[in-house]
Image 1: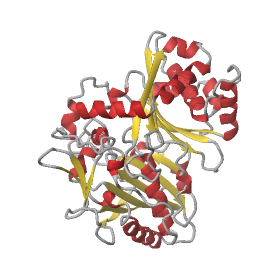
Image 2 (image 1 turned 90 degrees about the horizontal axis):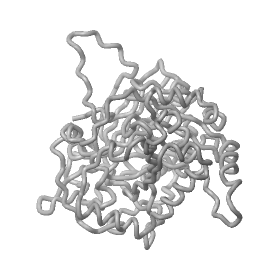
Image 3 (image 1 turned 120 degrees about the vertical axis):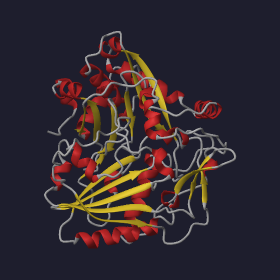
Length: 459
């Protein structure tokens, strides 16, 4: 059952006329790997398990296409998809659970698996509608598969769904990845490899599928009976709110100015704050100010950190799966907003640097001793949470017709305070901040001169 990130979608009212859909589905199919895998079963590692009650990760890549037929483009991409799945074969499987010890794994053969592929057309929609400003929520739901679908549903649904939509002047590629199978690093590894094969080039980096390299402990799980049942059991349900999502673009010059300002007053010999910590501190303070929080309120900052290089021994960057953990810090609103920005940056730096191999090990052991099905509300009060990374070269995903005009996230896994970071499209050191906030707080942020002086050039 698909739920709206915890809120089940309302049924249409009795007999009311439905508006004509902007996107019309023209074909549905399934793409399988060209040949069977030699590894029919992939056990999930402890790193993967917390995401079973998150939602499919949704990405939309929008391309301009000139002089190429939609059917020809899609045909090439589907052929390359079948080829790339030979190497990234878990994405063509289904979730399964061992009967004896209730450990989770991916069944890679002998199932009605494969990648779900949808072809559609929206010929009144132009690329600019999706590349500039705020993309209409209803249109996004029609362009990106599996809105409101929990990873738990991967027992019966494909672990990857793809939609190709013909636009008036281009193509929209919507993808939904089961987050219990892979993290952002592996997502963009797959996308880059798929694009390489579509261009007729070999894969530049092959995935490593041995998840015991990350963790070999088998963890028995008692799963919710359904996604809706899990959401209804949330001990701290948040009241419904009107959320808005938009992109704020911070050009390289602004990033350098933020970083220089926050490091200017540090004592000699002090480790400088990174680009990420400088921007994150600016966003945390600005969002807290926009929320109009009482001075004594607590606000939490969380960042989903890639642990590949933090483990001992470290994992290769090509390890395929989840190797992320949430790193938390927090403070009262008053010191956050009245102290200089380096106070916030210092909290972030301290928390991130403390998350070393020993801390990662302790977190894994804690989960293994008492597995938990997580909720978004577990992120903490008045939270700002950062996922994705400007390190991911999302604008290098070129299928042979150029770089994307825009990369966006779908509605899934977005809650009040969720932030996705992407590199700027121009290939420089700018950063795009895709932010979801309560509608009133977003309005306050858009009118915040201090925030907008630093960024926000999207109208």
